Each structure stands twice: as structure tokens, then as C-alpha cells.
Amino acid sequence: MGLSAVVITCNEEANIERCLRSLSFADEIVVLDSFSTDRTVEIARLFTDKVGTRKFDGFSYQKTAAVEMATQEWVLVVDADEVVTPDLAKEIQKAVNSGDHDAYRMPRLSYFLGRPMRHCGWYPDYQLRLARKSKAYFPPRFVHETMEVKGSIGTLKHDLLHYTYPTAEDCIRKMAFYARASARQRFEEGRRFRLVDMVFHPMLSFLRIYVWKQGFRDGLHGFMLSLITACSSVLRHIVLWDMTVHGGLYESKNSKADEN
Image (cartoon, rainbow, N blue to C red; front, side, top):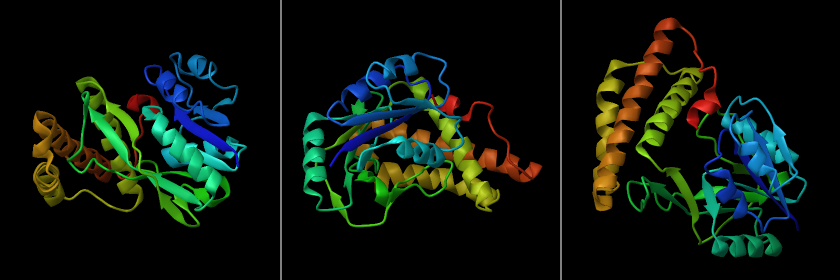
């Protein structure tokens, strides 16, 4: 039972080597790039010959296209800023060989400004990433895409590492990208701006993460993450207001590139 590791990229020069090196246990590595302007593709080709390009039109569409490039029975879908540890790699190989389930989810440990976050609702943050290719699919969503599977799902115990926000600059850039993308998703679902949402949602977001999800146990990092989440909520509602007022969507000229 072969395994294809699948990664989508756009301007991931700082992350892609670390990611692909951790996937060396896979029988095949597939990289689908969104016309990067840095050395992402050049670095990717040091690890695999299976590197394609496709215009970015949403995360679920991009990942669906990447999975279609895979030739093995199983697929492992990994983001460019994630790393599969040696222990997780062994566990994945064992799961694939056993065939006890059609898919597996795994806990993900995310790093925020260099610190692993074990509270704030960020851990264990189970991710469904390993599945038989024939059983997996991504429902159409521009952002916050999740793999779905037609079949049984097992759970792995070792962490997938996620280096999501290495610097404050990354936080601000990604906050803007996801706020815009999330607003677009909401608009397409028929939701419109409401002042009451903009007033109360950011406050509730902060309280949910810092108090209810015990973000205070992550110290200053937990406090900053809670604030950033609240700010992201404000920005999302501002963008949704703009879409509501103008009666349509606007889209960044470089949507995926803006995230990186």
C-alpha cells in the first residue's frame, strides 16, 4: 500500500525544505504550487520531480487538484508550514500497512511566535490528513477547508507540528488574509454585515480563547493570541460590511500570495 505526501504551496521558501525533508518516508511527494515568485519550486524539485503549478482559486479546490496528482493508494495532505516528526512518520506507515481504517486523524501542535501552544483551543486540534485517495474529498470552500472521508476513521497519537506564526509580521499578514477570505466565504453563504455581530463577536472571541479555552495558561503568548483573534474578528466584519454595502465580492489580485 503506497503513500503519496501532498503539499500545496505559494511563496513558501522559508518553510518548504523543512516540510519536504520530513516527508522523505513517503513513496511519493506531490507539490502543487500557485506560481510562487520565490525559490519554492526550485527547492521542491530537490525533493521530488512531481511539482505542478495551478492558479489559486481556494484552498479546497487547490488541495483537490493536488490529491488528483497523487498516484499511490493513500494520501497524506500536509501544509508547507507543517512537519511530520519521525515518531508520527512511523505511526503513519504502520497505519497505512494495517489498513484497519480508511482514514486517520492526528493531533496538531501549533507554534505561535516560537512557543508551542497547548491551550487557547489550539491543542490537540485533531486534523484529518491521512486517507485512502479513493475515500477522501474536500467540500468546496475558499478557506477553512477540511478533508472529509467516506469510511471509517482512526486516531493517531503523535503530533503533527505546525509552525504557523513565527513572527509578529506573519501574524498580521495572515490575519488580514484569513479575515478577508473568511468574509468572502460568509458572503457567498448568504451572510451579511450586522453591527451587533461586529460589537460583540470580537469581545466574545477574546473571552472564549483566553478564559474558556484557558489561554491564560500560555502566559503572554496566550494573551497576545487572544487579542489577535479578536482583532481578526473585527477585520472580518469590516470586510463583510464592505461587501454588503457594495453588493458583491472583491478579491485580492494575489489572494494566496497575500497569505505568505
